Amino acid sequence: MPSDRRGFLLAGAAALTLAPLRGWALDADQARALIDTALGEVYQVINSGQPPARMYRDFESIFVRYADVDVIARSALGPAARQADPGALAAYTQAFQGYIGRKYGKRFREFIGSRIEVTGARPLKSFFAVTSVAHLNGRAPMEVEWHVSNKSGRDRFFNIIIEGVNMLASERAEIAAMLTSRRGDLAALTADLQAAG
Amino acid sequence: MHPLSLAARLALCLALAGCASKPVMQDGIQVNDPYEAQNRRVHAFNKEVDRRVIGPIARLVSDKDDASNEPGAMDLVINAGSNLSLPGKIANSLLQGRPEPAIKNFFRFGVNTTLGIGGLLDPAGSDFGLPEHDTDFGETLAVWGVPEGAYLELPVLGPSTQRDAAGKVVDLLIDPLYHLLHRDAAWAAFGLRVASKAGERARFGDTVDSVLQDSADSYAQLRLIYLMHRRHELNEGGTAIDPYAAAGADDAIDPYAE
Image (spheres, chains in turn purple, cyan):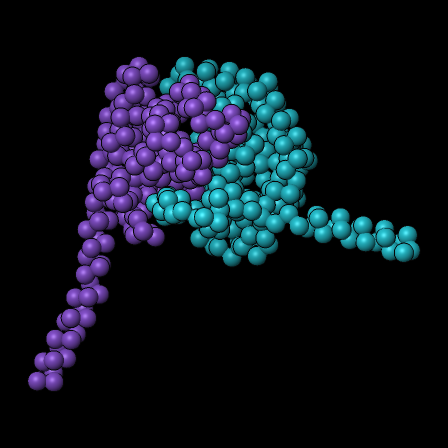
């Protein structure tokens, strides 16, 4: 009996320790799958040979489908997001996603003939980090890390870190500077964003 | 009060004010920029140099290069220049106590100097799986425990830190290449290195242009990008921003903050 009980206790302890691990593993696979799918669509656009303006719109729609645009836009705006009224915030978010589509879409030429290989996923803080390596023509391979969360209710990425350069941090600085030059006027910033990128 | 003691107190105040500029958290990373005013003047100068001189030349060269599919003159110059940088990188890896990258760069140098016709081509990278392992004396100093120091923007050379700027000077002095070559050859090698750097600037021209010319505050943007990238290279801390945690904190009402 004692040995049975010990076995039971051990099994219970093992189940308790393994359960969260299994939970993590499942989510890490989902996070990885999300980035794989999103990248597949990005490369379809890059290799489509469409006119640039059309590509930027396609990149924007991919961004909207796979990224948590609300949280990215809000985080980029910083403390000002707290005071903003919902209508103004929604208009800003709309302008922000177009700006991101154009700004990052303009870099597409560098990715023609390249490939990005997803190499792994691991839990980090309250979310997941999906790691990948970008093989670009004539350059040393670049590390690209994607941060994926399901806090919005769906799996979405909210940050891209290319060789240490953090998109969210960089956009926070940029949006803060744009807002300062407009003396904190969110509507004016939104108008600027529609033309920027 | 004795005038001298007053002067001493004033000097002490000034010295303390100089030290008082502690690193601050900005956009999710630590920024230590006590020389910001001076740096911004240098940045304005660099931006102007880039817009008027480097950018146009880079565009001219890369347009010419794009016309043909074969490796252009620019690629050859970039290859040859970076090949000549390898002895210095090998020396730095050894100073850091890292034999593996030193050995890889040693074989890379051997392969590209011979099969790659004096470094003009890059068979080591394309056929032997030996890409360049980048390092410098700034990294050596970091490995030795020297702190990063203040952020600096150097004329023409661009963003740096006190540690990296010191590293650049030492790199020029310790580069084995310049000690092995005659003076004229050393100057030629140095010229090729500079041309190679300019070629890289041309190759990444669009990216540099977009940061420098399209940012609302290109100084702050460049500083942020440089520090994040450099710290990543030196394994000195990544930045994992959790906007969900931040959003939660934002939503909490703090009556004392009003």
